[in-house]
Image (cartoon, rainbow, N blue to C red):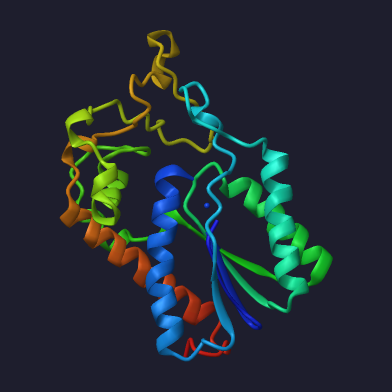
Length: 234
């Protein structure tokens, strides 16, 4: 996770490519805090690159904490920040599977301290720029995420290895079901040779710049609405 905090305000964010995304979100928020004189009341906290990512554990090198471990980690971090005086906390969540455990963690913090933690999920950010994407569906290491990485740190992207994979978008119903990806044709709809879901071959740095800018604008606007009385966000 990544955090921007003050005696009144904090923002905190959560993994591999998502770790770099969270740092990219933090940089302009840091500039905002400096420009608006948060220097004596604000801080950007380090990213947390470990989380609950069960969909990818079938691939070598992929790591995932147990859900209960991740919840305990988040609770411990947030409770310490509250004990240090933070009273407004905003988490920038750059994962998808992490949404559920974060909901549990912030509920626990509310019940134990009375502090209501705001959470911004990556799935709700940057929709103003979504029209620039060409793929039909996606979700992981796809056109969207690869474009973000090309804008943030192109040295870590090997476009020569990009492979289009099935989008794995479930048919919309009133039900949601857990999903996992495996490099095994027997996995059916969960088969992905590379671990990607979508079409990273369509990615570009220009698309990444556009979506990153839209995401940051959403975060800044959200902080201003959620914390209008916090020093520096008026």
